[in-house]
Amino acid sequence: MLEQPRVFGAELRRLRIEAGLTLTQLAATVHYSKGQLSKIETGGKQAGVELARLCDAALDAGGRLAALVPAEPARRRTAHRANDPGEVPAPPPSWPTPEKSQPTAPYESPPPSRRQVIAVGAASFLAVGTSEPQQASADDTLLGTYRTLLNDYRRIGQMSPPDVLVPVLAEQTRALTSLAARSGSRTGRELLALASRFAEYTGWLAQETGDEGAALRWTAHAVELAAASGDGDLASYALVRRALITYYRGEAADTIALAEGARVGTLPPRIRGLATQRAAQGHAIAGDHGACMRGLDQARALLGKEPGPAGAPVLGPTHLSDPVSMITGWCLVDLGRPQAAAAILDEECARVPTGAWRTEVRYGVRRALAHALAGEIDHACDLTGRLLPLTANVASATVRTDLRRLSRTLARHPRNQSYLAIAPQLTAALTPAT
Image (tube, rainbow, N blue to C red):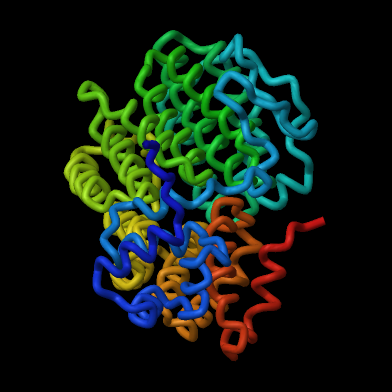
């Protein structure tokens, strides 16, 4: 006799009764109304992933409930999603396109506009001015200048909309590639390696605009440039970057599989640490608390080692004093443990450097979400209200993913005065600019 497929509502009821909880008790634990839970148990209302994760944690179900929730509708995913790494849609016509077959060839694209140069400040203006160097040689002073410039762009990227900065970074990648072609072998390799880091950062900002296709293209180009310089390790880090895209799609298995591909023992500890941390995030959205926490412990040990050669650009986040602790709080939200998440995120968000707006908004919104899921609606609204003015500056597609989750959570309390006070600004922050 065939086994009947499990239905979320019936399974929730079975697990609740098995745990000895009444509807009222479970409702108080997950901060949903008793009426909502009753409708879900009887099949009158469909559960969302957020509730499933909270119930998984409350009933110690190990992700079984979340696995019964239908996948996110495709319409919520970005229009620029690539079906696979080899099928990437064309970029917007105004964006530079990296040349795939010849990593050292210049890009056939217009230089950044005057508006874009002004928007990213004097540092970018000076950078664009050097995009066609007069001398063919490049010495350590030039390399040091471009390394400093990359760090400057990262600081600018914390405070600027990503679509403004991407064309300027593309121009700098082209400039470094051109310089490398006219330099000696050793210096040329170093310039190509640095160009690969510019391209990798460009890919990250492309993802921040919501264009997954451009993010994949630029990350692939970074791998090509790195390989041409003799650095094969960046290809593995590219898996970590691709795993971030699948994470935001909610694809746990793909996130884990991609990240695991970058955990080879011969790779530098930082790449393995970032890969292990990303895999832990995948385990979190799969509802596997044990695997997630074990992964974070392993990531802490790896990321605590020497990050790499002195002076070389650092891969991954650079504005977190303790990235593993911050990601632990992040993962606990996905694991349906908002109280524990809020305690960690409160502490770690207080340590974010002044001026790191993108980082402040990214983790601050997740912190507000943790408090909202824990039933602390007034406090969550207060935190959200402080962050909303910065969201327009950073214009982050990935932050908006959490902001939508936060908005849905707060909207369950339509009579709360704190929510009513910020609702118009929250709606505006989630409305695409025309």
